Length: 200
Image (tube, rainbow, N blue to C red; front, side):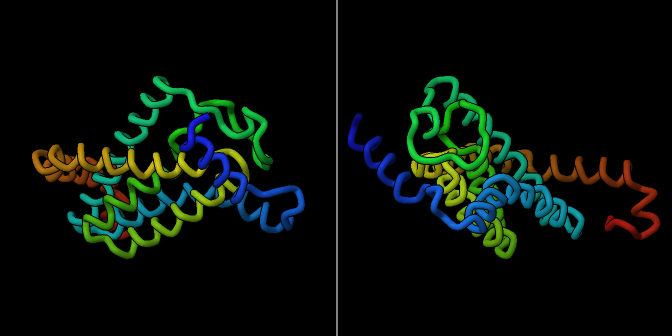
């Protein structure tokens, strides 16, 4: 075991909950680890429905960065299998999870990609909210025993790579993509927009 992996395991054990941890804290961590991720589509829907091409472009750009980042994660998992803590009998696990590769964390990859994209798009309120959610999820998924701390660092790195790859493509075609999606949205939901239920 090399020094980095030893550090990774030591950090994991310092964060991972034990059976003596308060039940309320374990329950809260379970909720954060599994369910806070659903804030991402809610944030994107709020951006889109608030109207304005700039905000809608930010929402679309987040989707592009997230999809690319998750694709990179899949390639990493195919090329290098890093076992989760429970797969090597390390620490304690408080939620069920498939025994697949732990590196990087998909949950934190999504949140980190969204955070970076929103902050750089000028959507500070949504970006900071997603940053706080990401930090909470990163802690919770280590606390409940399904990830190592370096899985979270890897997720941030993948998010940065995905953003860097999306950025030049977005400059070339992001505006056209956004306008096209807006046109589809207006056509499909014309009845609701016409009644004032949705913004145009």
